[in-house]
Length: 241
Image 1 (cartoon, rainbow, N blue to C red):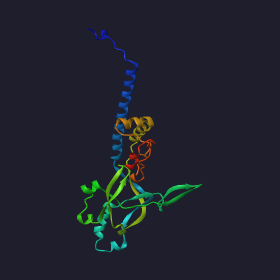
Image 2 (image 1 turned 45 degrees about the vertical axis):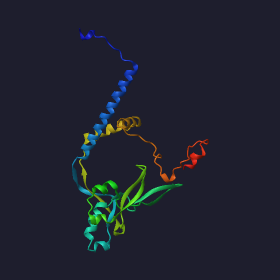
Image 3 (image 1 turned 180 degrees about the vertical axis):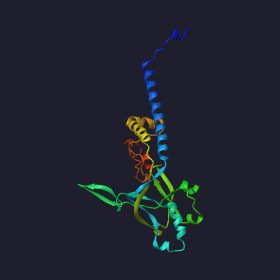
């Protein structure tokens, strides 16, 4: 029997829509994988030293205080600081952030910078390779996590007065090698995927949720258990709370 003599099965309109949607989903997944591969390639490009270094804003970090530097434990505290130090960058030396607007003027205040807080996983696994002497300077603290919607244990440094904040210029000595073809391809894929409809569909295909609001994560101290309860609820249901 010739192949041309086979009976032809006509696709229904519903089947055609399903095939178009399936091809669209496959294209989104392929573009997302390609975007990740190109992003990794760009990050793995070598660094090239600059002929003329330049200053790009300011950086603020912790350093040993004068008393600690002159003491016998200076080397110990310097090694501890290298594991919990935090660095922030800003265009202005004052490191002020905009809080709110009053009429036609903006109100600025100082941004708070603290030492690194160790979560329970890094503490138990000892990913930062703390010694027993260094662990003695940390204490557990229970805090509310808006990300996990529960209380978690974190470990904080108990003697932050041993370090002071210093502000120094941020000098750029090198930059990453620039690839025109790679940047153009990344830009085209990003412009295509940045559409809200495509981004939402891609998140759903990857098993994630695309949220617009974050008010579902509430502190248990302010949760009203009587909210949205009907008026005809029995008295015992109210007394349970």
